[in-house]
Image (tube, rainbow, N blue to C red):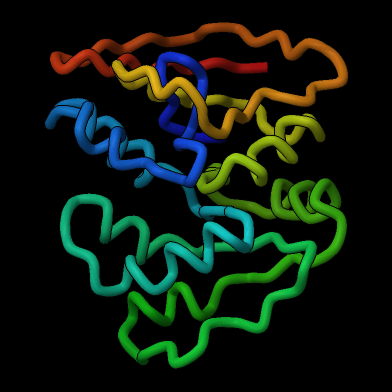
Length: 187
C-alpha cells in the first residue's frame, strides 16, 4: 500500500521539497485517519533520501505519528549505497531506525521478496522519486491518496513518466471537515 498526501494539482511536495501545506490544510479528523493508516502496516518502506531525512527526526518526535513511525520496522531502498545512521542513540525509537533493512539491488526483486514474507501489509511512504519507481514497476497494489485543498502550481508529481496508462479502481472516499479528501484505489 502507498500513502501519499497530494495537492489538488497533483504534487506531493513543492519544487524545493516543501510540504508544510500538508499540516496547514489538515484537520483533526484527517490527521486521525492518516495516523490510522500509518499504524496499519507491519513494515514501512522508503527510499534512501526520505529515510535519511526522517531517521534523525522521528526518534525524538512527539505527537500521534511518532509512535507508529518509531515502532514499525523499516526497510530502505537505495541505488547509491547506504552507510547507516551516524551516531544513532540507544533509545528504542532510534534503534528501530538504525535496524532498518537495507536493499541496494533491484527494487522489484526486493519488494517481491518482502511481499512473500508473512505479516501485515507493507506501506510505502516518502519521496516522489521512490514512489514513481514503485508505480512504474507495478509494485503498488493499493493507493491511499490524501488530497489536500491547496494548489501548488509546481512541484514533484508521482504519476509522471508512465509508459502505459495506470487504471485504478476507486474503492473508498472519505471527506473531512477541513476539505481534505482521502481516496483509496486498487489496481
